[in-house]
Image (cartoon, rainbow, N blue to C red; front, side, top):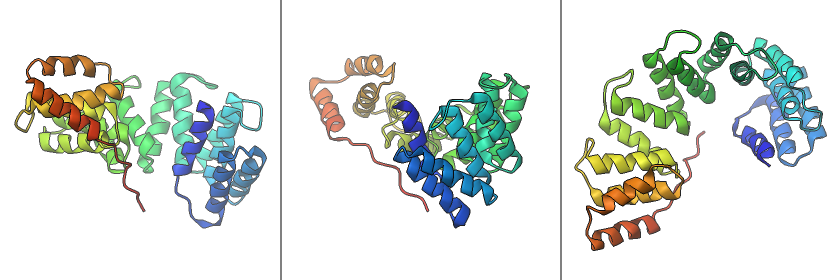
Length: 268
């Protein structure tokens, strides 16, 4: 089921034009688990010169959708697609090199491919490139460059990048400290029910980071974060509760009960 869910996520890619329309058809077929139709549509896109068509053919091979799983074959298809300009293929092939899946583990190659895809504007690659630059396994660590990539991906709505960019702004990691901006990004991810965003808003209200401390709000957000699965939120909620009156605890719980996540706004 997880494998199929990853395929559905492909549908977030916006496509236009006749070849890209074939990709849209292929993605729709994947959602319906019609793998023959999907492969046919992706091949038509690839034959028309759309490199992302090759990427999706490779992805079906990698996941074993409608065919026997073949990591080495998928990597070969990704390589051809990357050479033809597919950022999706560059990012995926880079991740395969990062983890040594079907190809040699090669951190330098992984960073080169992923950051090249980032330069083409792919949000997930921008996030991945930032993580690699902070980690430094392929060379020197570069927090400032990583923060720059997080900012670009955050602007495209990448939740993980929003959180890491917010943390960078909060702590002055590769950028100037800007608590107001950090809070704004955490609010965006929290509104989507993200555990880290919710927990971070709890911290901000708990410690009064850039705003007046508000223990009731802190309890609210820690409570929501705990329900969303953040591993430290329940302990933080219990600590804050000792500073509140019984009436304040009930107030915070009522706010949490009436709170609801919001889907991200649609983009053109």
